[in-house]
Length: 269
Image (cartoon, rainbow, N blue to C red; front, side):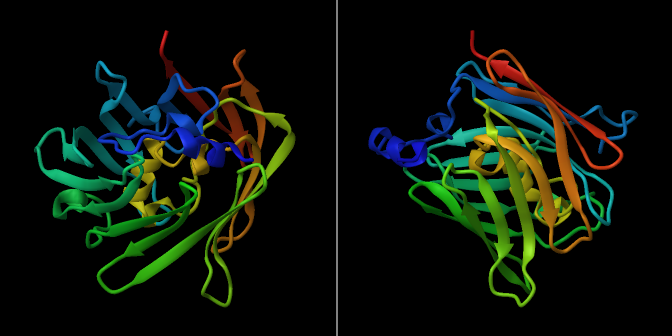
């Protein structure tokens, strides 16, 4: 039985905050900082940086969502938890940026970008609504609702639980992402981010990925060795993975020529 299925028997019947530790082999660590070549060091050395409250939940996140056709969008956010909702506020203005609703397992079921979400951002879009569907408490599809367009991306996993594809299933030519893995190596925790290709179109979803609330996508069981997007030419090879003594991924390289990614973990003592 896959770990995600076995864990269902011990999940809580109600939850007021993100409760995702059961999806990981190592339950004590979170990605505090992710350094990426995408960021100009004169602007920021990191793609995101989090701070935490006394319970270990993220309370702030300074984050960038690089675009394919536009410059990086910058979000400096406070994170507030209230019952079955999580709210994101701009640190400076106090404006509400996004509202997330959780199910009884602490998993996001909707995320709604607020009117202030795109204020001051390059190429502003109308705020989007995301709807998340799960099978056996594993993310199976994401519906993105825009003013004039609704799309549904579906996830397919291998027998080990690694994400294989995340694509629109209803178009003649598949649109979306495909991944491959090195099945000889199992990691306790990893973090990969699909910022190379499609992130500018789904900024709210990407911010939730930075918070690791979709570990099915960002922390596979095996080492990810390639990422290909059907809407853009070529692929993105991933290699030179470095694991620490507890089998957590701490760095890797990708692309040609090599581009560096570094992961800084915050772990409970």
